[in-house]
Amino acid sequence: MYVIDTTLKKPLHLQLYEALKEDIIKNYTVGEKLPSIRSVASSYSLSKTTVESAFSQLYAEGYLQSRPKSGYYVRDFQFTIGASMDATSSIAPEIYTSYRYDFFPAQLTKEDFPLKLWKRLSTKAINESLDFGAYHDGQGESALREVIATYLVDSRGVTCHANQIVICHGFSDAMALLAKLVRDKYSHFAVENPGYHVARRVFEEYGYTISKIDVDAQGLDIDALKSSKALLVYITPSHQYPTGVSMPIANRLELITYMQSMGGLIIEDDYDSELSYDSRPIPSLQGLDKHDCVVYMGTFAKSLSPTLRVSYMVLPKHLIPLFKESYDAHFPRVSLITQHTLKLFIAGGYYEKHIRKIRTRNMKKHNLMKQLFQEKLLNSFEILSQGGGLAILIMPTVPFDWEKFNALAEKSSIKLYYANERSGGNFEALRMGFGGFSEARLEEAIEAFSEIWHKSII
Image (cartoon, rainbow, N blue to C red; front, side, top):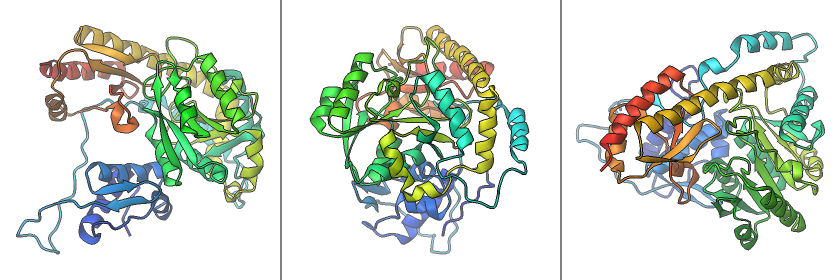
């Protein structure tokens, strides 16, 4: 058994990664299969995203290989043990690197969370009416589902009722639940390319055949989807991940009509719809669906907090009986206190006020980052995606020494992120997150970034 200590500052995925790595080196043989992500998550009470991050790092470092529909296996790797070391030798623990500037592309600041209000509402939520001795509704508390339904109808143009909503423990949990629900009907899963790696990995874990469908300036290539014969497709139509393109209304209607005619199912991920800066948020694709063939996915991670681990999905009416008959319908996926606090937060109008504040605050940082890039990088770069979310995507337009650039970034304690690392395909960009910075700190970070950028121009 591995020791995973939730009281440590070191992130859980790094603790698990280190424990797995040591176990592989000491105890596993080449070709031996590791436990599944699902079983590890269950054994150690971790989220699947946490476990997947640890496995992904081991895969990237060459310790593991992934076999479709099978799992992870130990690769034939080479390593050298010094002559003075033996089985009792101590191994120096790996040091977690804390970067001076971390451009993580999906992060809010600590101050963005309304902590005092949340504590007050949480105290109000804990009252004698709550039954802490019972198993509550596995679909989620009805009061919370009611206020989410009202919010979605008013703000996102989603057509739904509370009885269609299922409250889940984060995006990966919602996707895993859906993968289980529909696997008897579907076995072929299509995903955008480039696209969100978590969506693909979840359905891979459940043994689906995966087709990667290219994305162009109009979003998902519908003709390519038709050629793939896949009848289950995951898309991010309002703000495609990671390219940022939006799917036009004609394409949305064509996709819905085609999938309905084939008995297919569309999974719409509306992951950062609230954070749109150049225009009003584009209404949901689900709101155009007259044929009951769209599953709408939403989360509070980008707009409120990823730590709360609250997401939801709006099921088509024909899937609701399937969910209610499933084992998962018996047990709630999010704590009772969190659900009731969130219900008070939304019902009291605080969530909409919070969204306006977060959008305004991050629009300023978005515009500041864009302005600083233009001032400091001059004509050496281009913006590939901007205007929404918590990051601006850029690439150089001049000959560039990437190896030197990455080495300088590490030396300067600057953490960078690349689109291709998580989304695949031929699309590449630097994902420059601004959400985790204050405005003053962002100016410092861009100044340091511009120095290593210019040193890397050939």
